[in-house]
Image 1 (cartoon, rainbow, N blue to C red):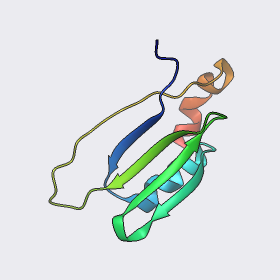
Image 2: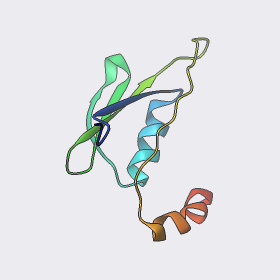
Image 3: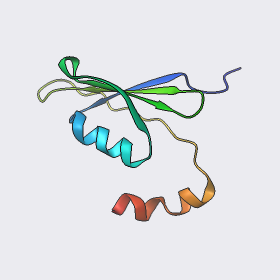
Length: 84
């Protein structure tokens, strides 16, 4: 049965802003391909991958979502962190 997600890809409108957001979550940028407007992050010890693909204005945008595992204390403080 499935025990984890190997990789997830999301479309974003602004690659730089999205990179800064995920870095603030403590996720380290693994690789960026400027000419393709894509960035990859590795998450956790198993190096699960998050890919961010920039979609330009005027291009159809597909919303997506996924969830991170966090401890209870981080969850309790998430509202204040997001407001910052």
